[in-house]
Image (tube, helix red, strand yellow):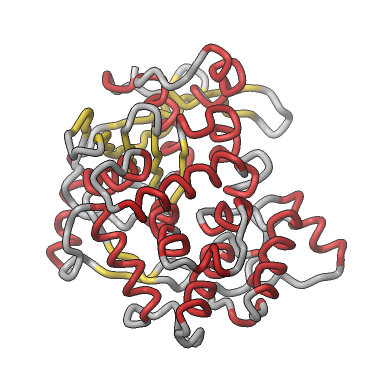
Length: 347
């Protein structure tokens, strides 16, 4: 733990400034970070900053974890559609659209919201919070942004005959299977990796950004994986592309980008400034980590990389223009600043 903390301390002082927050004529804040762009053969296409110190991938790795839902046959056994698979990959807003599907899914596998250990949460957006308050309902585990992933794990446990109790523990058969898949996709043994617990109560293992980017590249180009893995990757990609609203929700970066670009850019947010992407058509994976954990900076870096790698079409630029240099507004709605990318590899 001490060695990992020392590495993080060095990383925070050595990583370059990737994003500046500009107010009026002056730079007000800066966000340091690192990123890696890797192909499915493990070749590094771009790398900036420290991409070797392990970082917790947080929710950015959900599409990789969701492969277990397909590979075990659980998705087929319970007749899950694209909506269910997309929610297993999601960090959703907790809107009614999301919670109703999760609730119906739980009923299908013989479980309830009480079986989810992610904990009750308020919905992500103010609009969804107001709707929940007016309905008279209390926040529940269904509203937690990870409820889809957790329902996926319960589905695997039910299908394989494992106990649902403790499905979130590191030594549970479901988590051991998921970790095994993650190890294969990131291309490294994680036995000695730094370990922690996600906010939703699921084990998380730290991996270098380059390996995380490799996993995302393999999701889009699983040529060196077994046939069942290739089929599972295709199922994940199709579900994410077909159901972008379920990946996140209203006004969310992930939903807007996937809705515009489809499988060309399957982007996935993670907490603490992590962002990942599978660029299926290019056979590339992206992994980003912002040192101070700012999501706004990670999203700005992702947009710059999509531009740099020529993923954005003219139509896409038109639809996503305000994400390239996100404006900063006053409370009265006047534009008073923006986020910009000063680093040469992002310009």
